[in-house]
Amino acid sequence: MKYSDLKDKSLEDLEALLKEKKTELFGLRMKKQLSQLQNVSEIRMVRKDIARINTAINAVKKASSN
Image: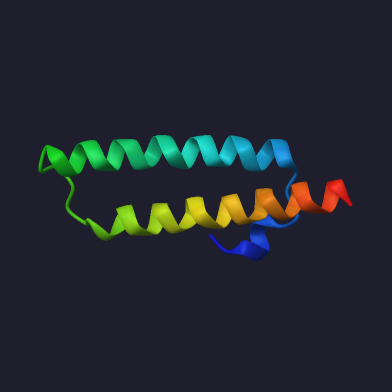
């Protein structure tokens, strides 16, 4: 997921996507603890996606306040 994909989305879409990614991260962490996760780098990718979404949310909020 790239920031350019996120910057055109609405605030509601971004918040829904953020909730989805946080749920995915929780599931990956559980799989890691149960030794069922084959590719642990997925956790890093999801964390970075969450950071990108948060950046896009803050940009939308800042643009709407001006």
